[in-house]
Image 1 (cartoon, rainbow, N blue to C red):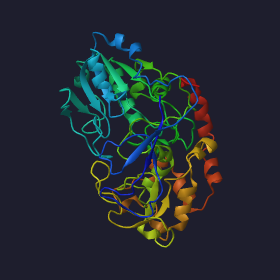
Image 2: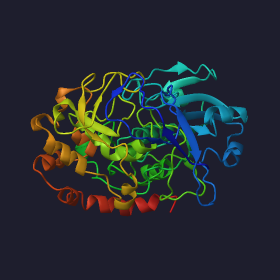
Image 3: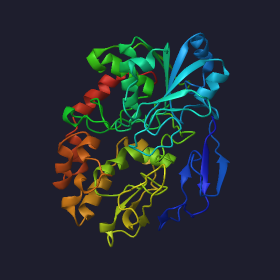
Image 4: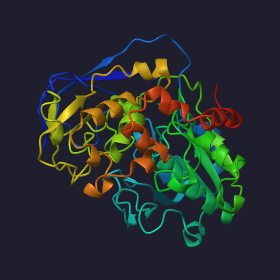
Length: 424
C-alpha cells in the first residue's frame, strides 16, 4: 500500500478566515468537499514489507460465503475497496445487497457532527438507506427481516467518544436479538499503538461513551466486537454471532494513514492523531478548530487575546460545522498543525499539558468548563469519562497526579484487553 504526503501550497481558504497560518499541513487523503488548496502528491519511500490489506480488500475470503445470501451493510464513506465503495464493489461481484445502514454523518458522509440523519434511497444504487443516527440507533426487527447477514465495514479511529463503536454495539445487539450474523470487515486503528485515559464511570455513560473503556482503547473494530461479546456487554448479555475478516499484515504498531477522511472534521492525518487529546476541548469554552478547515488541530477563544499570538476566525462551513462556537469572532490560542505527532508513539499518552496550560491562561476560569454557555459544548465529564477531572484541573493538579487517579482501572483494562486481540 502506498503512502502519500500532500503538501498544501496555497494558504487561501474557502469561507474561512485564518491568521498566522503560513506552515504546511500534511494530509493523507483528498477531502470529499471541494479542496480550496493547490496540492502536490509525492510518493514516500518505505522499506519493502508485506502489503497491508484491509478486511474489505480480501474479497476472496468472504464473497463466496455471501453467495445466495441477502446482505445488509453498515457503511459510510470509509467503506472502500480501492477507489470504489464496498457497496459498489460487492454489487459488481454479484453480492445481493438489499439494504444499507448509515451511522453518524450518513452513508455518504455529508451530515455534520451530531446532526440527525433521515432514511433515504441511495440515488446511485437505488438501495434503501436506513439511518442509525436519527429516529433510532439500532436496526429494528422489520429492518432485519429481509437480511440473512449484516456486514459492518466502517473505519474507526480508536477513541471512546468516536461514535462508530457505539453503532457497532447497537448493530450487534439487534442482530443477536434477531439471530442474524454480523460479518466484520476489519480495518487498522490509526491510534492503535497505545492505550490511555481513565475508564468510563457508569454515571457518565452517554451517546459518546457506552462501555467501561479508556479514552484510547487500542482495539480494532473486530477486536472490540469480540470484547463486547466476551465481557457480556450486549443488552441482556446476548452473544452475537460474528465473523471477522482480519487485516492482513497488520500489527498495532503499524503506522496507518487513512485513504479517506473518517468523518467531516477529521480531515487530516494530523487531526486523527491529535483527536484523542484535542476533542477534550469540546468540553471547554474554547473553539477546537470547528468552523475552520483545521478542526482538532487548533484551539482558542476570543478571551485569550494578548495571551497568544496565533489567531483564527471560525466561520460557518456546511457539512462540517454550521454554527461553531465563537463564530465570526477572532480566537487566540494554540496552533498544533505542526506538532510532532510521533510524540504520541514515544509517550503512548494523550497530552494533558495543553488543557492544563489553557485553563491557567484563561482569564474567565469560572466559564472554562461551563457547558451551559453554548450548545456547541459537551460536558467534560462525558468526554473524559470521570467526575474527578474537572476538579483536578481547577485545583492545579499536575499531569502525573491526574494520571495516578486513573489506576488501577487503566492497568486492569490493559490486562483484560489482551484476551480479545487479533493482532500483535
